[in-house]
Length: 374
Image (cartoon, rainbow, N blue to C red):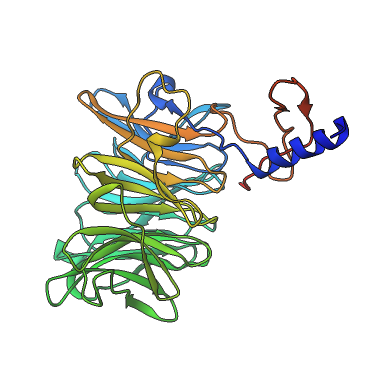
């Protein structure tokens, strides 16, 4: 075989055997943050102490550092979610003389918008905000008699989504079309995943163990694919993907239970699953590779980090994950490029790393690994 043919054959082998890029776990406490949410621009939302006894919401990125979001009039606020525009949603005390809190939406140049409550005075929760500023969560109703899922829409305000027949409900995710998912009590004492649209109202999704299986829908992407957890027929709890009425059990890592917390628009899912020793481990699932321990995908890991759950994933593939330690919870950004700088714009293709033919030291230019869209 002449050199040219040998070179082409070697290149063919290289193309047929792609090498998986390792992930890197960046300890976010190294830059002073413990966030609860991240977007594709690597802007983080969280809460930090600004004075003794005072916790306030912030947005952080590696370029501008901290942006303190302030409050609605009280001393404390907390962030819960961030969208692709960098808008942050959360809750805040409304004055310094009571513990009453309201949901808020923060926008650059606008500041905090008070989203109110459903009539109650105890604490609301905020779960997600979409690209148009639609916010979802749960709020106490009048007299604090119950807690109901809500959707807040710009120009419309708060809408009580009601329940599936029980007392309480909570909205956990919303996509850019305004479709909401969550969990609701039922009249028979169960708690089931739901999907809500303006046209169809609140609909019980059923579950892995049948139409009366307990569970929760935790996130929805722009393709209408829902993830969460549901009781199986054997009584264990399984992470699921729901798509157009069909449930898929994502399985586990050798143990009994698993939960899916988030899905991106590529269909990649993250969550937590038990291994055969009953330990909780963060996972990444996709339709090609199935469910994998996120720890098994880490490359250089000198600190022997053990990620226990993954709580968010962006369209650029960044994963927000937690590690439970004896000293408390540490939050990591799990990424394939190993830094905190914003990724390049989606219309820019980064230069590929050189691939070297074993034994020859000859770079094979132009052999590019798949670029993930942000």
